[in-house]
Image (cartoon, rainbow, N blue to C red; front, side):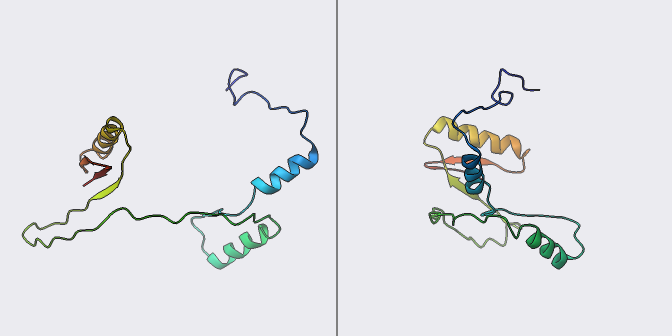
Length: 129
């Protein structure tokens, strides 16, 4: 389907790769750290958990993932307006530096929501309400 003209169709060959270097890469890269196993229609959750734990018991967990804490850049505002009869919700995110790209994102929100949301652009942010 991809052919030799694309990266998907070309084989990778290295004269310096050895069996031990390939195993070393596999042990570092193909680990369970951060993996998620999800299933639907499971009638006995405990049996499923036990089967997964047994099935992966000998797998390499990997090193701890070092992550930087998230910084909350938003805020919340609640306005009591009983006469409105419904609630307004606004979601906003840090926007791209390019105003042209921010406008494209706004249009994607408008078109993708089929009129259910209104996209907006504000200095440093984009969002929907």
